[in-house]
Amino acid sequence: NNLANINTTAFKEDFAQARAMPVFGEHHPSRAYALTERPGTNFEAGPLNQTGNPLDVAVKGDGWIAVQAADGSEAYTRAGDLQVDVNGQLRAGIGLPVLGNGGPIVLPPSATVEIGADGTVSVLPLGGGAVGLAAVDRIKLVNPDPDMIEKKEDGLLHMKGDEPPAVADPNIKLETGFLEGSNVNAVSSLTDILSLSRQYELQVKLMSQADQISQQTARLLQFS
Image (cartoon, rainbow, N blue to C red; front, side, top):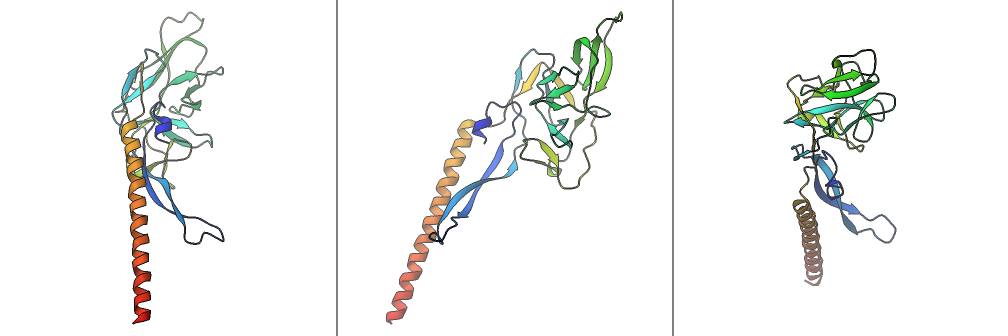
């Protein structure tokens, strides 16, 4: 999963570990394979890449952008590749509604959209004799305790268990015209996978040898 998302905007590396997975079936009662699973997430920031797009934003330092997940719940991401859909709704990443002070941010028809460092979304309305930018809403930026959030199958960060949504943090700032890259190191990830696989194979080999020694000892005891 890490290697597959090395070019995904703001992707957060999954820590990996291996455990034994028994082979189910009538003729395989003692066989097992190594299963790699995700016990946690690396929340370190990825590199910032300049795009020059005024709707691209990157979170400076710690913090997250609040979005609405597919199930309607509040979730968090650092993917700041924003766009405005045909209905004027501000969306992030794969089309998730960006949350503001009162829910998903919806913009009026406008000629220009600007996003401030504090997350304020301003527009220059179409027609009507508009002479300047007007603030419409403010992107909800949060910084919950890392121990209180977890990455789920949708790739977004969610509050654990029954924890309430995170509170907006006014101290979080955005860098406009930049996108955060993935924090995955391809070489390191590949090395870790190979290392885990070898460690597991070594453990299985040691267990097999211990079992053989035990059987040989049992046979010797039978003859004595």
